Length: 257
Length: 311
Image 1 (cartoon, rainbow over the protein chains, first blue to last red):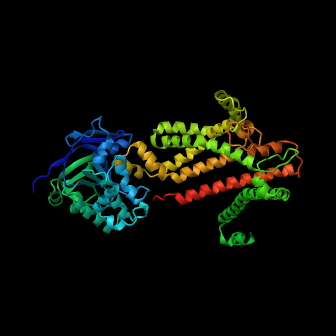
Image 2 (image 1 turned 30 degrees about the vertical axis):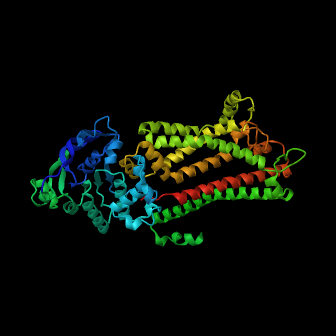
Image 3 (image 1 turned 45 degrees about the vertical axis):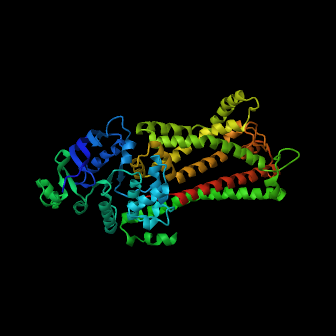
């Protein structure tokens, strides 16, 4: 297997909340059209790292990000860049499904509208819902409230909503942690489908999930006072079969965490 | 009572200390019941007196005349009993006040909930709420002695007593109510919705107007209706600044009279108890009560009906 092209490079990323360090000097490359999973115990900076990729940490007043995220040859933290422009290119799916209290249709249309989309909205909504494998279930009730959908459907709606702005990267923050096993399998199936077109970064607590869906795995850990360290990064298969570090092995075999 | 206390009074059931604690609990319960009954009894009494006196009034004046006649002159020798001038006067001031309070209140709620840094919010919110603590008579004279002359300097057709200056000041008075309640509703919108919208590339303004405001709409509308209801029931500002002329008009620049200031006018005078003039204040009172009660019920219905339930 040839190495895929790099789409995002994280270079010496550190994040502080006030005086508290949550991510320590992390560098690694994300491959295009791959699923990269970020695993590790709670509080080791996984979500913080994910939120650094689309500058969502900007919304937290006390957060300070240092280092560079190189995307298309440009550091997204360049001061002149508008974070909203970056977010058009990086869709995000959250831990708990968070559909807007609007109709299914309006949930999908919201992103394109704020991005100034002027094309055929009906078609875009249909395509987005088809990509997230929700179209057949909702095509007859697009005007119904999104809150009436089941949890699994809501999460697929949130994926469709993220896809509607035509991003290149999809960031997923424990997207299945609030879902039942069947909905989880549906989302995982969807991720395999989506990576043909998109690059996916997923934070997960579920190691079987990381092993099932991802091509590369990054393992994060705290060691004593050193918070948010990238311990090991590489092919998922290798990380789960012959990890280089003792800590990684202990974690994936469930000896702690 | 006896049945409730029966088991408790039997000392065999309790140790001495437990037994006394049980008695104490029962006494507290009865006291609290009586106290809460007082407010209910008072309300029932007020409403009954109002209905009784108003029914005497409606023995002399038909409801049809009361609701359709456009002259209100119970204190003159040629008496007409049409509530419409008082109703239009009241709504002129109340809607004028909403015209000020609604946009300003909503904008300050959006600012406080979405834009203001925590430190700024902690200062502005209490300051806004201080506005609610200013005595209404002060607002009334502020309207009469400060706002009216300004309006008069703009146009000569504005009279000293007018609905507009009362409405402007009343708008300022109910502004904190609108902004504070709307802001509470907006802050109750889950953070995850805002994040979802930001992650799609929405700006702060788009998140505020297209996500947070619609999601909080039930609370916002309820705050509007409560504020209208408050404006309709407000007495002092209109008594001081809006005039005492029950005129059937939609012009905000001439003296008018509201339902509340009419009641004040009659109550202060030497109207003999039991006369038709005296009974009019109950007829006006019950009209006022019906309007505000209806508005409060609508607002409660809206809160329940349109609330989005987030877990």
